[in-house]
Image 1 (cartoon, rainbow, N blue to C red):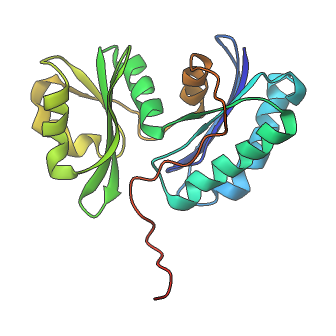
Image 2: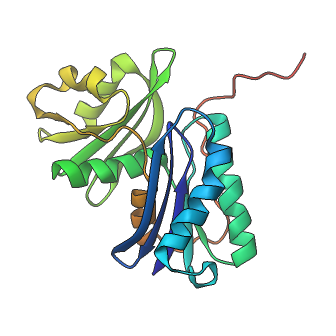
Amino acid sequence: MKILAADTALGACSVAVLDGAHMRAHRFETMERGHAEALAPMVEDAMRQSGIAFADIERLAVTTGPGSFTGQRVGLAFMRGLRVALKKPLVGVTTLEAMCAAALNEAKTDYAAAIHDARRGEAYLAITSETEVLLPPTLVTLDAAASKISGSVPQASVALAGTAAQLIADGLGARAIVTSIGQPDALWVARLAAVAPEPAEAPHPLYLRAPDAKLPA
């Protein structure tokens, strides 16, 4: 299956093109802002490198969140536009599940947790194994993250990903393995999308916290 995937939801912008198990093109850049300007040129460059025509793409994939309000909408809007133009299914993958998949691959453990610093003393947390999601993306306090992982994962090694991984590693002791995975990557979004069921509709953004902007009273 030929898949084009993108992520703009957190602190990076990435694009990947898969052809079955083969990675045909991959672009990844860490960035706090500028996703809207970076995404289209990265997609164009990746597709050119892949040698695959847009018309031959069989499935699209994008991160749905959690992430920054603007970042989530950039990727979703762009890929939803391609979904309409190409008439191809668009699979939504959460940022945390993509990071967990990358962490499992790097650490070769049975369990992984993605913990992204959401500021205000809170974190976005998800926990997965090789075969299931043990804890879907949720918002927790940083102080509670380690105990949440301990309560969800048996006494086994757990790979940690995300910007808050190092902060909570001590609370898990020797079984915590802090990986190099700090941001979601479209490569893993594509790999998860390849085995996901075909969606009946376009994905929607996953918000775990209300936006900071408030309408006037």
